[in-house]
Image 1: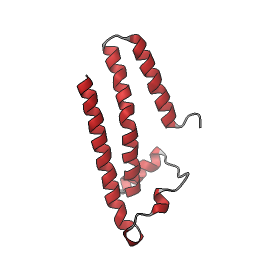
Image 2: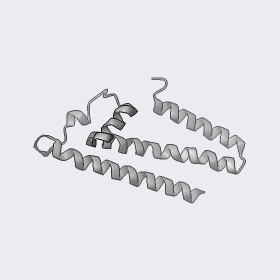
Image 3: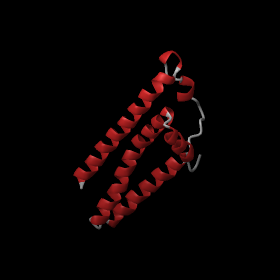
Image 4: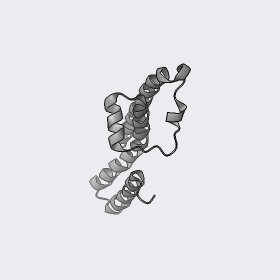
Length: 116
């Protein structure tokens, strides 16, 4: 199972990197004088909702691709924790199932923005 988790982590990083590169490649030609529009990249407080992200991906928006790549990069270790819950459950180690499920719940609540 550890090999599968390692494969998941490597695959997650490779896919996230590929999506980030696609976003960067698509972003450079659209900026002024060949530069990326920094105001869009580093805009503070820009709301990123799943709906806006999906709409941007559907339009082929490069900024949405960048955001999706970053999201995939963040979600990769979260998936590792989720897989660990199943590993402990298969081993019938219920104490660690509870602890790991609690960590997963905290991670998901943090990603959802609960408590801001």
